[in-house]
Image (cartoon, rainbow over all chains, first blue to last red; front, side, top):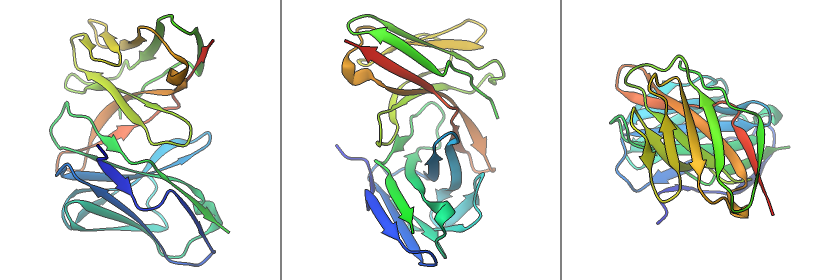
Length: 113
Length: 114
């Protein structure tokens, strides 16, 4: 019954490393999203994609990039990880049609040391 | 973006109905109200959504006021496993391609007490 799968549940990386967070959905959704969640700040949108190879910046895109080469897969890339990118990262997907729900993955807790 | 406001926290006794309020006074006419919940260290889980009419599913009921400026999520017989943060969310369009992002507030931390 798993619909949105994130590749790692927990991840520890060193400052300056290039980090890839992978997300796969099996519902043929057009839209995919990456959020980060921090205490007191709630969920904030980093990037989203509305089609293959199409992407838009969210509210906090600085320090991140994304890739969507296939419809089912949306990758978040930290080009040079920093300690302030330590966070819970959540992937979601949805149809474009209004009135349909979005589905979230279980989250990746990333720690940058 | 349409904003939502919710109480920071609520308590409810096990077996009783939990009623979680939400204000969304700036909601547009075609924006749906969604409810999600998040249990510690997990991704948000969809509960229910509605536009104008009241809705019910196996998890909860959603009551939307006639002017659509507020809604209430009802968990009819709360259990300990319903302890979570509950988010009332409006989806807003982003860009020109029709994608809709979920705009999260701080949510209500619901604690079900034995």
